[in-house]
Length: 154
Image: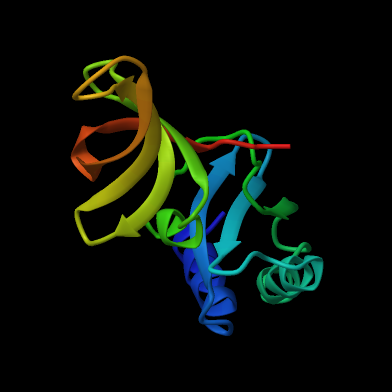
């Protein structure tokens, strides 16, 4: 199987829609091709079909048999590429850092090397008894993130 040709076909199919981006491309045993794509505002079933057809129509099953799976990210899976952070601004993330610290907050900003999280917490009043709600923020470098997942809230 010509992996470079398939990579080029995947790139060409994705480039037809500037909102799409590649998450993962794997060549699995028994000539299975696994393509995972995402989009800045999601991916429709029609887009998955279009990408699949764009790849498959340029490969010859007579030459070599294969199976092709074009899919979108599972909501329970961690974020794999930085561009996914941008599409999840204003959503709650659960993050585990490389030092095993856990953070949870609303993704507010994304730049080229970090993200900003915001969350509310209850703290003792500076004067008197009781607690007040305080909004906190922190900046987290991409290189410090071991895993980040979008938290599903019902």
